Image 1 (cartoon, rainbow, N blue to C red):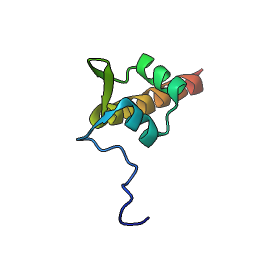
Image 2: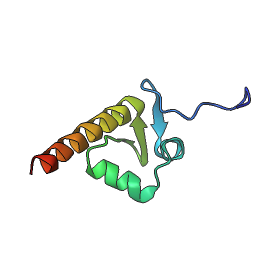
Image 3: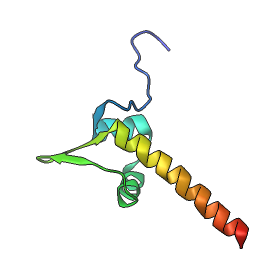
Length: 77
């Protein structure tokens, strides 16, 4: 990585435009819609949408917990 390249990690204290967020996270339009349906918070100001890094990281943590819970339920059956 050269000195001019920025890390492509989502930072907790940052706010990203929707396009920048999709670029950094690697999520396409369909995956982004699915994430919002599953609880990812977005902020709309006028016609623009934004995602807080902290909301995305919390969303990921919740998805991990939900998947672990689902796996435990399937295992118990």
